[in-house]
Image 1 (cartoon, rainbow, N blue to C red):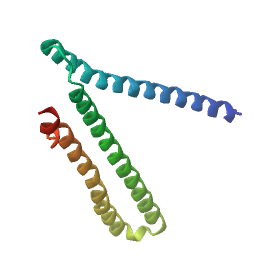
Image 2 (image 1 turned 30 degrees about the vertical axis):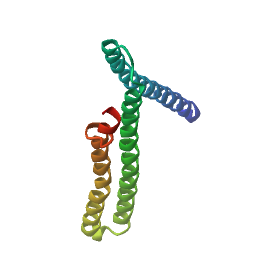
Image 3 (image 1 turned 45 degrees about the vertical axis):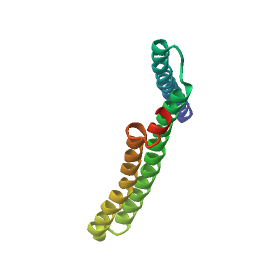
Image 4 (image 1 turned 180 degrees about the horizontal axis):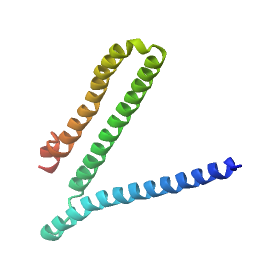
Length: 139
């Protein structure tokens, strides 16, 4: 007989190791992104003789804002899509004859939910490449 407690403990240990690796990769990536803004400003500082910290802060905040916008926009749509698919699967399981109507309604709903992620992508691209405050701050 297989001891289920040992299997569950192994799964928990593997999951915690994977979460630790993901957290490490995320932190390393954020340090890389933030340090790239500082390094870019240092190359300008070497050429001009001083560092304009306003530009550095503006670029760093723009990068962080774009990341948050995309992250929060996609988390919400992912949860919404998961709930929609779960509800549709449950409805088809209860009433298999109405599968066509349920699936059509689900697909239309998923397209509407996905539009929120596309709007988040558009806002992210505007923040990164066509920021309306860029001319004011970076002048």
